Image 1 (cartoon, each protein chain N blue to C red):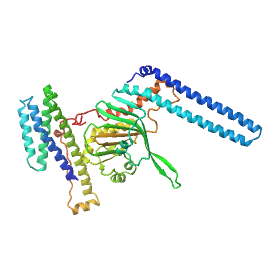
Image 2 (image 1 turned 135 degrees about the horizontal axis):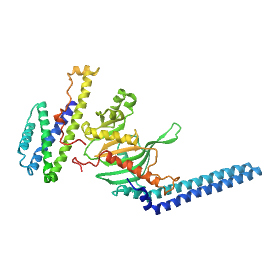
Image 3 (image 1 turned 30 degrees about the horizontal axis):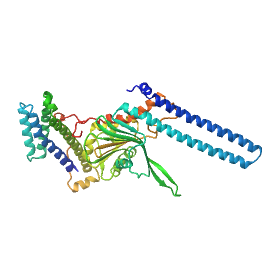
Image 4 (image 1 turned 180 degrees about the horizontal axis):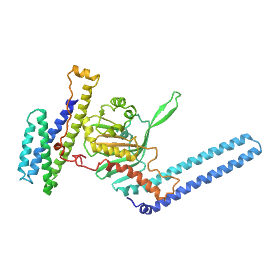
Length: 153
Length: 319
C-alpha cells in the first residue's frame, strides 16, 4: 500500500512535469524577457525526466514548485496573458495537479502510518520481522516547500 | 436578505384566495362536526328514553362513521390547500432567491437516483418524493427534493409494517472537481461508541469496493467514517478545507445524521428531518408573513450548502 501510494505521487508529479513545456511557451509569448526563469524551469524539468533515486527526484520536484509559482505570477504584470484562454486552462490544470499531488502525499502518509503501526505493534510486528518489513518515513514539508502553486480550496 | 412584506404584497391576490379556502374548509369542519355531534347527542338521549339499546349503539356507530367521513374530507381539503399554497406561493419565492431555479411541488428526485447515491443500503419498498427545486445556483447545477423512503418488513405473525429508511431532503449537486470513484462520508457511530474497536469495525462496514479512509482532522474522524474506492481521490475531494466546511455544515444544521456521497463527479447530501419540507400550516393564516419567512428560510438553509461547500469556486479543470 505504501508502494502504491508513492507511485500515485510519482504519476501526479509526472502530470505536472508534462504541463511545463506548454506553460513556458504560453508565458514566453507575452514575457519573452523572463529568460532566467524559463531556463531554470526547463533545466529542472530535464532533470526530473532523467532516471534517478527517489530522494533526488523529490528534491528536484520541490525546487520546481516555486519556479512554477513564479511563472504563474508573471501573469499579474501582463493582463493579456492573464486573459489568455490557454494560460487560464493551464493554470486550472496545474491547480488540479497540485491538489492531486497533495492528496497523494496525504494518502502516502496515511499508508506509512499504518505500516509503522503494524511494524511496531504486537502481533503484526512478528509478521513484519519474518518478512523484513521496515517502517518508512513520512512526507514532511519544509517551510520553503510550503509555498504552493495555488492556495488549496 | 429578502423584503418579506414586499413579497407578501406581490402575492396578495393568491394569499387572499388561499386564506378564503383555508377558512372555508375549517369552518365547514366545525359546522359539520357540530351538526353530527348535536344530532348524535339528541338521538342518543331519545333512544335512551325509549330504552332501545340497539338504537343507541347504532346512532353512536353512525355518528362515528359520519365523523370519519368529515375528517376524511377535511384531510382532503387540507392537502388540496397545501398543494394550492405550494403552487401559488413557492415558485415566486424560489424565483426571488434565484431566477435560475424552478419549483415543482409534484416532482421529486426519482427512486433510481436515490438508490444510486448509495447513501442508504436498505432496499426500498415504498418511496415518495415531492417539492423539487432544480436549476443552477451560481455555477452549480443542482436538484433537491423531499423524500420519504421506507422498507417493508413482516413479523412472525405475517403482519406487515414499514420502517423509514430516510425522511428529509436530498440535495444532488454537480461537484466542482472531476473524479471517477466513489467516496462516502457517513456518521460515525462505531468509533464514537466503541473507540478503537469501533475503528477496526469500520474497516469492515464500507460499501462494496471501498476501503476506510483515515483523515487528519481529529474532530472529523470522531464524527464521520469515510470509505472510498480510491484513497488518493478521497483526499483530493476531502481537502483539509472541505473537511472543515463539512464540519461547519453539520454544526449549522445541528444534525449528526447528515450523510454525504461523492459519486459520478456529483455530491449527494442527505439531510434527515422529521419535519415536512415546505409544508404550510393550516393553523396559520395564509397571509401571515411569518409563514412566508419560514418557507424562505427552509429553502435557503438547503441552498446555502452550495456556498458553504464552496461548490461555485471553479478553478480546476471542471467548469
